[in-house]
Length: 77
Image (cartoon, rainbow, N blue to C red; front, side, top):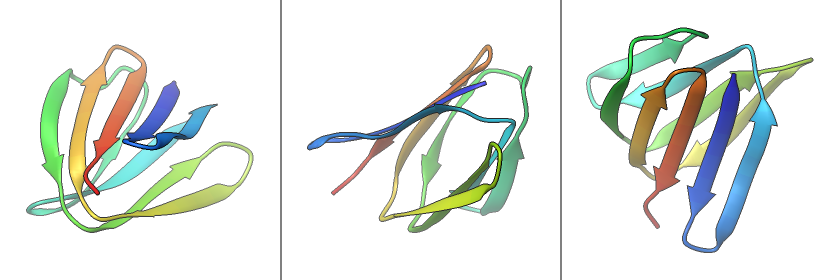
């Protein structure tokens, strides 16, 4: 699935991944391909994603939209 992490300064991540773990307001949650569409607020923490290896991006919060096989995160600064 496609993962995009966007900030006011530009694109932070734009790649194909197999799964994503996000820091939700009530705890971390995972997203796999084919996940039910939804919007959620994210708290400060790490976005961890998996492609050929585990990678992590620290964030200060934001909003995530999961739709189809796409995860788009808009960061707050």
